[in-house]
Every structure is written in structure tokens, then in C-alpha cells.
Amino acid sequence: MAKSDDCVHILQGLLVFGNVIIGMCGIALTAECIYFVTDPHGLYPLLEATENNDIYAAAWIGIFVGFALFALSILGIIGVIKADRTLLLVYIILMLITFAFEMASCITAATHRDFLTPNLFLKQMLEKYQKSDPANNNDQKMIEGVTNTWNKLMLQNHCCGVLGPSDWQNYTSAFRVTHNDADFPWPRQCCTLNAGGTPVNLDGCKLGVPGYYKSNGCYDAISGPMNTHAWGVAWFGFAILCWTFCVLLGTMFYWSGIEY
Amino acid sequence: ALLPYVPRVPAVALLGKVTATTFALERPCCIFDRHANASDAVWLAVAFANASATFRNPPSRADVPPYKQLPTAHSYMTLETAVAEFSCSAPSPAVLRVGGETACRDQGRHDPCNGPLPSSGPYRVKFLLMGCHGPKAETRWSDPIVLRRGISGSAIPP
Image (tube, rainbow over all chains, first blue to last red; front, side):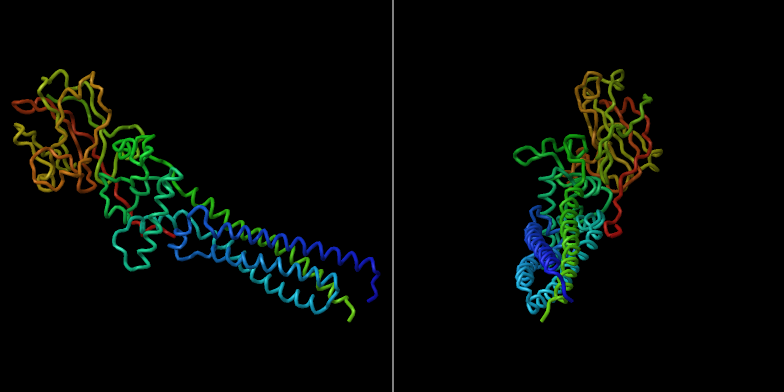
């Protein structure tokens, strides 16, 4: 029961240091998740149309968890320095709740990363891109989101389709219903365009002459940012959780050693 | 005259050389020069592969089977081009596209229409040199050309 003052001071120092790191990581997590939620690459409509946007839910949880970690770390520092049992008890309980939320967010982000396969986006693109007869209002919203996102993707990243322009030839699509195959073997956005937005050589594009159409697929442009998003939320979160776990154990040990 | 040339889809890598309703052919060079006058025209005869044996060359330009007869006659002729574009010195593009004209598809005119092909075939083609008095030379029939048929998009596994 009687500990030397030096040991207590070392433990206090370590806990304060641990909480400082938690506070800074909390701010970093909030900033990272805000960055992902603002969707700088404009890919959110594609996820919305899959009706499974859990990696966005994980990022939202990450924002609030990060802020909570920051607030709790300050509470923890005060509690450790003042050696106040009540404050530290409140700290431990709230930190455990935050721990649970962050664990949920990380696992969600990590497992839903596997949901984002090329076939998922291919199916969605074929079924929704430029579809002309929406089933209901919700469908119309998804169609607009998917169509605008794909048009923007193909123009900005100089790519066509998910795996390539042959996606439009290998599979039937909603696009094919309104655009005949002879004039549009693939969408006009797949042709190399000049500064005015018109194809440089339309016949060359339709024939597939190298140089007049974009031959690479857009999957890398989609999966790159989404992977970064999912891994960023998941693995940074797991790292924070490991550190927080150690600090929590130390705090509980310190709490049990404080005399009434 | 029967020329030994066999029409074929170009070997170069063109992604759109065969699509669901069109296909591309190499433009033959030099083969008609010995038989042609400057006023002759070269036509492309397109027939379903199983109807190519029964195709008879039309005796004059007025008897040329038009595009809209393809479902009934199982063959048609299109791409009427001046023979000068097939000569040795012609600076023309190396590829012809069959099926590229969508505007004439629904009109009932008898002009040669290079309309999109209605099914995936297989088709066989040959070039026919027509003069004022009828056909003068022809190439051999090509190998059967099968067009692409898209798999249903909903069949893609998630």
C-alpha cells in the first residue's frame, strides 16, 4: 500500500504523458475524419447508390470520438495530477464508452472495405449510368448521382468504365437502352476530348483507334481514395485504441492505489 | 472475275473493330486496278453466313438488294464507293466500318444504307466491282464474322 513518492510521481508522469498523446491523437482523428466526410474526390454518390455507406458512418463516429478523446484526456490529466478518485472514476467510465464506439467504427471501416469490389461498381454503373426510366424518386436521385459522378470521373481521371471501355461491350446496360451501339459503342466521355469538350476524332473513338479514346478503367481512381479512407479510419483508430488501452490500465492501477 | 483476296477484320488492335452491331474490315488496295474503269464502283455484299452460298450477284445497279431487305433476303449490299479509293495510290484510311450509319436505318429509301446489323450473325462479306453493265469482279467470301453479344449486367456476381 505504501508506495514511495518517486514511483507515484513516475506513474503520474507516465499517465499525463499518455493522456497528452491521446488528446493529440483525438484531434488528429477528428481532422482526418472531417477530411474524409467532406468527400474531396466526389465519390460519395457511388457509395450512396450501393445503399451501404458504412465507411461514411464510421468516419462520422470518428469525428465525435476524436473530440471526446481530446476532452477526456484533459479530464484525465487533471484527475491524475489532483489524484482525485471521483474524477478518475468518471474518466475511466467515459473512456470505456468512447473505446467501445471507436472499436465499432474501426471494425465497420475495416470490414466494409472488402465490400467495395470492382464488380460492385461495375454492376452499379451498368444498371444506373444514364438510366432513363427511374422506378421512383429515390431511384431518380441515385441515377443522377451515379451519372454525374461517372461523367466527372471519366473526364477528370482520363478513364472509361470500371475495367475499361469494353465494359460497355461485354455487358448489357441501361446506357445501351437509350444509346445505340453503332453510334455509342461507349459513352462520349470515353473519347479523348479537345479543349472545347468535343471528341478529337469521333470515328477514331468509335472504332477504338489508340489515342482517340481512353483505354484504362476508372477502378483505380475509385478504389484508391476509398481504400485510403477505410484504412485511415480503421488502422489509425486501432492504433489509438491500443494506446488508450494501456493508458486506461495504468489509470485503473493508479486509481486503485489512491488512498481515500 | 474471281479475285483471290479474302476480306477480313483488321488484325491491328482496335477495341471497336467488332461491336454488337458493327464491324470493321481492312480496305483492300490494288486488287481491282486490273479490272476497273474510272467510273466503276465497289460494293460490299453482306450476307448471313448460311445464306452466302445462295447469294447471286445482281445483274445491274438497279437490282442491288438494299439494307432493309436483310431480314427477308438474308443479304444486302452497301458501302458503294468509287473504285479510285481502292487503287494502289489512294491515300485512304485502312479500315472500313460496316454498320456505322444510323440515320438511314429507319428511312425507306433505296439508297445504299450502311445501317447497323440487326443481330450478332455470323456474317460473311465480299467485295463486288460493279460497272455499267453489271458485276465485273468479286473477291472471295470472308470467314464468318460473329458480332459481340453483351452478357446481362445483372448476371455479374457481387
